[in-house]
Length: 120
Image: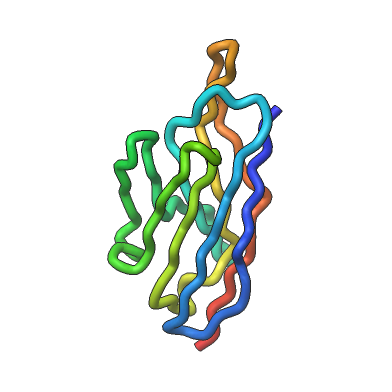
């Protein structure tokens, strides 16, 4: 089994910064894409950023130029540096990873989420 554990959320004033971390552990052979999602209160869960195993990245329009996704393949970890935060960035942030098992199967796993609250 595989577990993803997020950390780094909290309360910050508008204009501030936070760095989220997500570490994967368990029966991992390799990890393909890793993603961050955000779910605001009363809204659906939306993808914020994705990074491939080779380091290519893509961002939602709402966070381009403010958020940076990165990963450390040796640590099976993904990060989200969030700058110039806005109240609209408030929500629960989830990491997500496509994990290959040693047996050859692949499955997508989710973390438990970490709360980010941005005050105006």
